[in-house]
Amino acid sequence: MSRFTDLKERFQGLEEQTRRLILFLVAALLLLAVGYTALQGHLAALSRKKLSREQTLKELMLLQRRHQEATAGARRLTNRMAALTAADTPAVIVEQTGLVPRGGIQSKPLPRQERGSLVEEGAELTLSGLTLNETVNLLHRLEQGTKPLAVRKALIRTRFNDPARLDLTLQLALFRPAGTQQQQQQEKQ
View 1 (cartoon, rainbow, N blue to C red):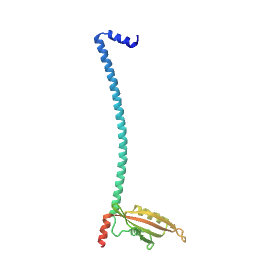
View 2: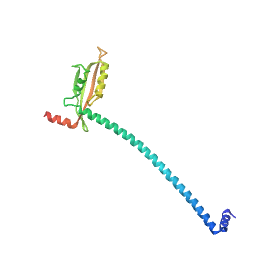
View 3: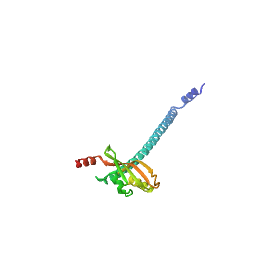
View 4: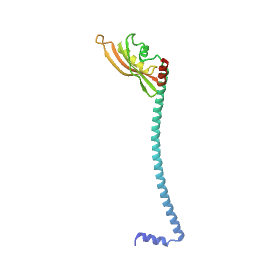
């Protein structure tokens, strides 16, 4: 006889109440096993969701920090634009630094370019007779100054007759709000 038939005969030989009790216990064990497996699956799914949400939260925190930096940069640019007057040009701003001697600036305007809500007013300036320290200070003041001025291109040459002096050719861009430029043109007409 096989074991299965032996177990079946023993089970049939038990009392009705004992058989019922054994069936209930086996059903309860099976139910517990199925419940435990389902609970483990649910916990694993929750763990995956948690990791996914943590990763999303990290990305959102990074995006929030970038947004705050961009907002701060936009505020700085807005504040710098508020400091502009109608008479400001790249040559005037360079003269206002006080680092370039009078008559040491030659200015050639570049075509205006519109970049969204900004108008880029460019100029090519040739500065002569600066020391290296004055050149570095000038570039720092232009980039970090109160006016929205950007150095697009710089060419530095030493003088043949006086190597301690430098000649600079700078392409500068002064940013203005687009609406302000149109108002200035209407006022001139």
